[in-house]
Length: 531
Ligand code: GLC
Image (cartoon, rainbow, N blue to C red; front, side, top):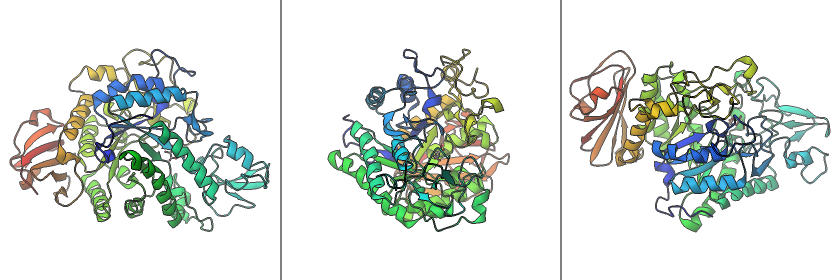
């Protein structure tokens, strides 16, 4: 439907910076108040696109906007082909897409293929009896087939008894989220249909929810370690059949590319805390375009640990010609500024890390403001997975309601009276401006958009306490130096003579690297030459 930049950047997902929008908490419309004041809408997002264009992100990933009873705030979908009225209408969505594209911003949607809402008509039919046409669309058993635990609420069995059928159904998440039976080809075809619905409307791709769960071997019990984890679904679900299913999903996306030369991208939430297993989800360039990297996300802000994770990721992906992603925060985990100890300096260092690593960075709304999680008092907790803190609404201005029309569905993050968009826009030294400068530098610098080949990227071996790498486009060298410790670094020979272009310490910008390097600083520096 929407013509967009045709094939000028077929593999746009390699150079894009993707920004995750959690629509409930992003923005309300100033002109068209939605049905639930204090909850964000699609029109609210459309009205803030100029802010996102100013910031300099290239694509948005929207957490689910489909019709949903909201037991898991949209990850429980009751109609894959409708917009939930909380967020607006299909017409609002089409307008958002047109307006995003008009600003050169691509749009990817969250696709939730592992489960539906228990209110979805497929499940309503399936649970009616054991003989209806959709009887086998979900995973039904007379007895729990294994010891699996659901992710939410923690510790409950993943097998839920249903009175109507007098059988158990599998639900890896809430009891309101029955797992689809992907062994049934009709289910697979129907889910492909949901992809086509949004592709036909012009979306640029999908973030694919818990995509490693598409193949399951019910005969396998979980090992004891899984029984202790919040995200208990670890080894049983990494099955070979999942890869076949991903290849067929990829073919659906590629049909669209074949008509206009532009990729429809997929990024998988492969929640396997193992880089090698994650790397397999790229297949031979015929499965996911991109996969999230949770082992990196969970690493502490410690140079030695981060270097190990980066090295492992790059080594494994380079082998198969795959493209890394880097993500530090999302709607499921405490924000990274918080995880990294709470300091804004660490948040700025993390921005330099995220935006100069080779691969596709994913930002989470509000990280550009240096937000930490909201303190959510017990009586305001709404998420059965206890993830409310990172989902707090974006404070847009310094007024009492911070740009919202009513007290929002969750409390604001700390310091909203100063840590808001309006205030930071007016302060050129704010973390918001810092992100914007970093994004502008990245998009205007070919070396910072390159890949992970040995001539393009090298981690610099170092002294403990230092995380550093070099990137090259064949004529310029770019160095990233991140030293969160209080110990200065000795001579960094490789960087000698490079000019500091952007730094957490603005007084270093424009200076030439020479001799020992300072503590508690991160910078990006440039020099002519090759690796
Ligand atoms: C993914 C989502 C999370 C959701 C779960 C079940 O992990 O990111 O928010 O609760 O899947 O759909």
